[in-house]
Image (cartoon, rainbow, N blue to C red; front, side):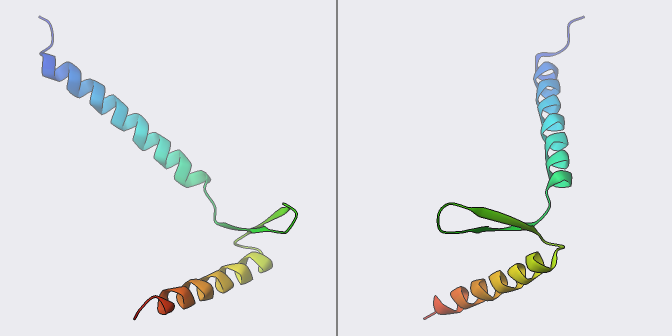
Length: 74
């Protein structure tokens, strides 16, 4: 007896959802926070969040974001 048509569609969608979930898990595992600075002339440098320079850059960026957020309020 052939499967019901809606079952075929449901299985296909479930398969796509499983693949998407696996992709997001892999992506989340491999992502690590970092700070990237761009210099005049096109040079760029990356600093991991667990380095001293990276931690200082994250604190400075947070302060800039806080200042920018306060400036928008009337």
